[in-house]
Image (cartoon, rainbow, N blue to C red; front, side, top):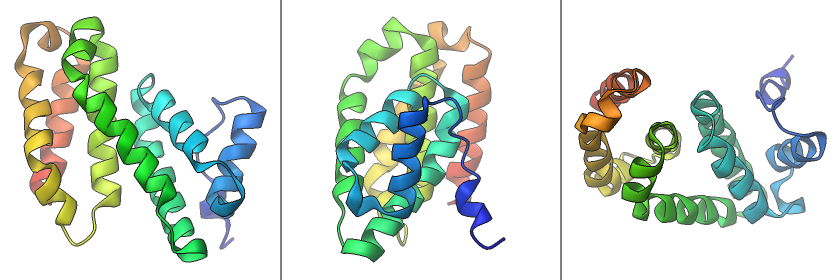
Amino acid sequence: MENSSKEEYKIQSFDLETQKLLKTALKDPGSVDLEKVSNVIVDQSLEDQIFSREAGRICYTIVQAEAKQTNGNVFRRNLLNRLQQAFKAREETRKRSTQEWVCLVSFICNIFDYLKVKKLPSVLMHKGIVHLKGKFTHPQVIQDVSSPRCLFHHQNRFVEM
């Protein structure tokens, strides 16, 4: 049963090829294209708010496995680059789709929770997270019932840090 926790990631929403890619990345990150893996995870997280929590766990596991296996940070670098791109386009995202906006904030907060190391990222990301959360007060966003719930949930987690 030791390995069962590693197998319990909720990746059934992906096609079989992508599931295989993710499972391989979780066990042997050096044997797959980690940029492709990070893109798959980010793309799905920006569409599915529920998956973003699972994505945080998956990303954490891949980062840890890569560091242990190769002492590298290719996956983390690609992941953070994609998140930086999404953050730069945050206003366009908010105007285009409230749902995608909520997914973006949720995913960034989940990655923030899982990848923090000795509170360093909390210092580096604090301003960005606070800015994103502040945007939840925009009337267009407040109309979507999931937005206030998301804000409340992430605000509580942020305070706990």
